[in-house]
Image 1 (cartoon, rainbow, N blue to C red):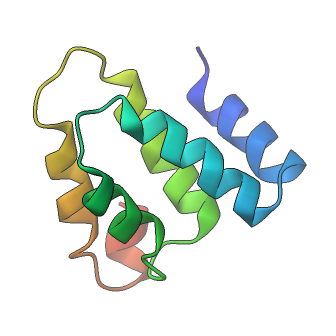
Image 2 (cartoon, rainbow, N blue to C red):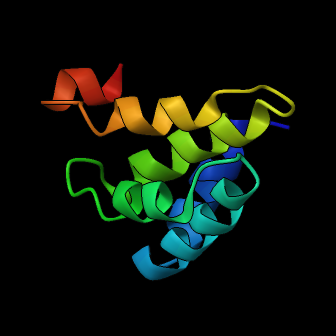
Length: 85
């Protein structure tokens, strides 16, 4: 799967609420708690586009434990440079 193409298509074809729903459904399968998923999705430091890209990347890590740690780490990001890299 081409993550970038899939994310671009989703970002340009869905409104922010649809992206939130898409991201939530993807994250449920990662082992993250509902509380962590909600905190992540409500985090205003990440745009819906950035969340969708990060969520897609996390979802691609099938059968990898600790994916919820990536969500926790994303809550600590501060500034555009950290968010994009």
